[in-house]
Length: 401
Image (cartoon, rainbow, N blue to C red; front, side, top):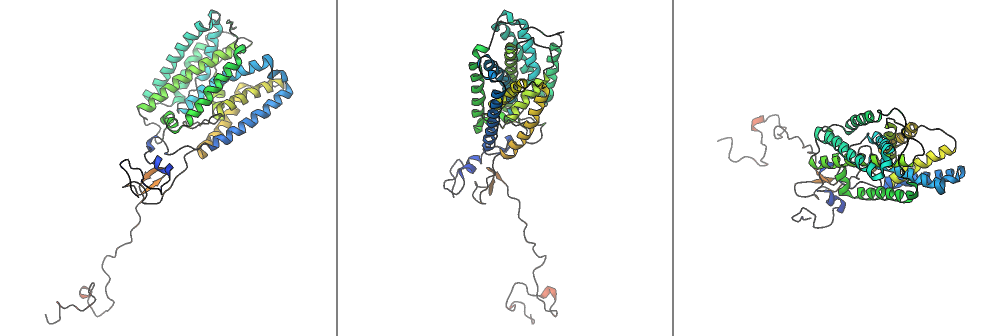
């Protein structure tokens, strides 16, 4: 089999998937295409669970699925969806942002205090602060190359200091009601979630977004490209969390209570992982975030219809625990399938190809050479005079010489 100037095989005999993976760089993750079947199966189970919970909610309180109740539910899905998108984006980039909850609460308090000035006047300052705060987190993570969870916890502490300056709940002053546009809001969230999942399933984009994910020593720097992608992910997740907090405040019927917001962080990260986003980064599904957010919100409304009082910590802990199991499944069954080809079919100089990357074959043990050539077994012949190569008598070394 021959090779052209690019190193590609000129004839069949090597699987196309192997050839397309030959030039992958293993320093940026496992070569090959991630498997999506595990996400399809899990998302089908999420959809089945959502359908079952929706039926239970319809039986318990049909008004929650029509009229004003349905609009409030859709806005709640969009609000939690923005937080889940924020957490999922940072998870995909392997720089989980645990400050999304405190940022959302701070944005809700800001909107409650400044909403009477108008949505635009309340949104623009919050947007600027969110961008600057996300940039500060990004610089701490990519310049110092420290774990994102630790840096974001430090950022969350600073946001909590801002929150604790309030002595009591703040009544929402704004007149913006998102319920009339609930359908557009949830469609916008669904479009972003699904399109993001579709683009994330494309192999080059998936590898680019998850480039910051460590493949060896986690303290090693991953390069300028990985740092840039991680920085944008941190900034984007902070902005999405801010938007989600303001939407939740506008959808609420009571005052906004000053709280740490870490329960929202647990719920957002847990929901993103429940949808199939790996806690290690890079891998994730397509419809998983949409189904997981809807499942959580329908469950909360159904629990309220049953008269149950469930802490957000409990729901967040349950989703996070289940999300850890999902991460294990995604990492076990979503990684590229090893592709082996017979020896000698790889490019020149690479005897074997495994998982799409040329690997050096371990040296095979060679048979031990005897220290001396075998000699005859005649005990009357001296060892040094024994013939070793000739099968006939020596003519040049006769006895009378």
